[in-house]
Image (tube, rainbow, N blue to C red; front, side, top):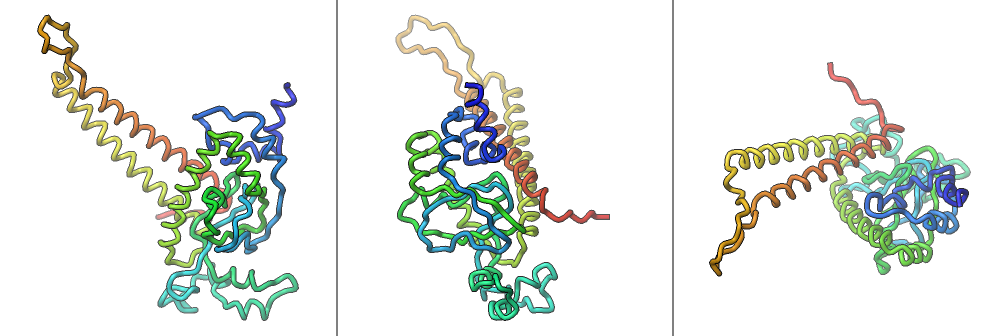
Length: 307
């Protein structure tokens, strides 16, 4: 029994048990010990190098992927010309992107023995949604069975390791563990909506490191905005309650009148519920910001210090 309890934390050097695919129900239900064991038996490990395509848009979705190491991204062409923004010339291209702005013909002409048209085409697209160690991707199309791949996935870091979970095994696990299956489906739908918005907002050629730094900055600003908003709302509601204590009816003993009813508190509970909900949202934003900071800390360039 002790050996069985310790096995999940040792699978794939403990990386499998820490993946968000398994931790998605933390705080909702306890993870059954069988789940990581069955998942470990169903997956197989694959290695990818920088620029290697995991799958293309419109491919049939055979599987999803759990990240053991490295950074992966959904990538797409820029909406204007597919390579650079209008007005971005060779002279104005940032040095960090200069190597990404060449044509497929130039890449193939100077290619080594391991080059391919797929890798050449991969250099023409840019990341708009990142996935790092401990995350997962490719599940959205498995949830909606009739949906082809909606995005192209690519390895962004120097090297990356993935655990591949076939579609049939994913469905079997979702059926055997319905609480996890429902959470996976809900997360897949929300992530697909976010992916669509991110792709529509793609307008600038960025490396994945620049995109990671921008993502951290955006989350920090959003977190600060929500904290300020929650603080103002909490302060305003608390002030109203202190100024008008009579707005919360006090309980009284019923009399003999048939129309008389005990007063019900109609203000205190809604206010408390709202404050509790806002506090939870602030904590959720803080936790997600911490996750992003931890993931990006491994590869994000140092932010310049203002003098």
